Length: 289
Length: 289
Image 1 (tube, each protein chain N blue to C red):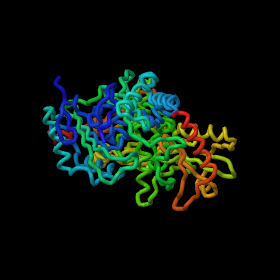
Image 2: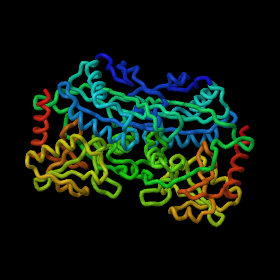
Image 3: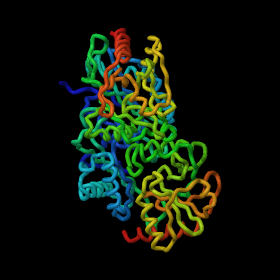
Image 4: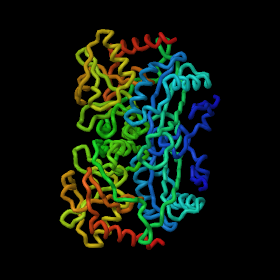
């Protein structure tokens, strides 16, 4: 396997030389936005939606105007894919507030640091295989989702300790995804995924006002469900609702639609709505090949 | 001015070459602990307490056993000071979880990245001058302190966006420190400082169980107050208490004891307890010269 090539601050560099300054605010404070984008047959999936969310994150952080233009960002992603000879991949695109004089208070003038890293993934679509080798084993954890009034829930940033602490709560359980509740106790999301469940034939997912990251894949799945005439509801749900649910699944850009095979130690069947949504998602991906 | 020298991963390097990998979890996720330590006459102030808190942070993050020994960390700090010819300085000491295979879930085997950066500060003690040029202008902000059940409040990490967002709330106010309340509304702390106030001659500061970072300087000031027979109380206070307070001040390692000269637009006098505590603190620093 050859060394991967990454894109840092405008240049393609071998992975071992891909670095940022220790003075970069992305390192000092996690003062940075990022997106994880899946690439199918050379095409970044939902690039527009990722680009928009990245800008929204930077808006929350007060440096939206410093983010390079969409075509520029997309160019860096494509150059990185080309340099690595990858057409099926996962891309991580980060924009930091860069190096600034002074200490914690951000300065208005921002020279952002843009980093693109890539990793190979299997082919997607109906002819491909899932990136996961089994349905998710999910465990609810003690760590609570950071509330929206402390850090905007819709911002996807390098401050990812909340999710890391949730994953650390899984030690010894055999689970591979942590399910976080909001401070007031209602279901929020997984450490790196959104939660869906099916009850009485309707698809339900926690509403964004619970305080969760509105995933790009979450939105795609909600759209697909509506196209398929599956009733959709978003709301505030407690954990007991999952016990009664006939199906539970997770979504994120890498996993796509991933069924939950075990929840808090209880085995669960993969159900028909999950299967149909997954199939529909793969058909949508097929159009990119 | 010559280029500063920093300490990265065991080596002294010129600042412009002081970098970390874009794969370092300290960059990707802010998955790192840090301390800001003031140095007086070549001696790091309260190094033991900083070292202990750093280990406590890494314990919360699950990699305490990977932190280099105290003498090793202290050696890196001293080498960095020597390389820069500094005896009065501020030191930032970071320990990250380093580069790991896989994605968000931390692996048990940790090869930490240790970074030391330094900046010159004026001489401290009774013969020195404060690093600030005026009492603090403080404004309460909408951003709420992250609750302890989402990220442990006692952990000092590279996830510093909560404080950055609070500082961004200050734009246009002329204030230089943001005062954050807990989610339930009681006073917590400043973005980079602890809050104290004097009422009926007694010194009061929000209790750690409100969810705040227990500052090293906060502890020193509480000790000094007890030595001076100033009554001390910690508790849960709302903003109205500050209106009635006769004195308000902030503490952190760099500012030491910093009076508040304006609070939510209202001018405030620097009071006698604040002055005496500041003097006593400087006398304690004098012993290091």
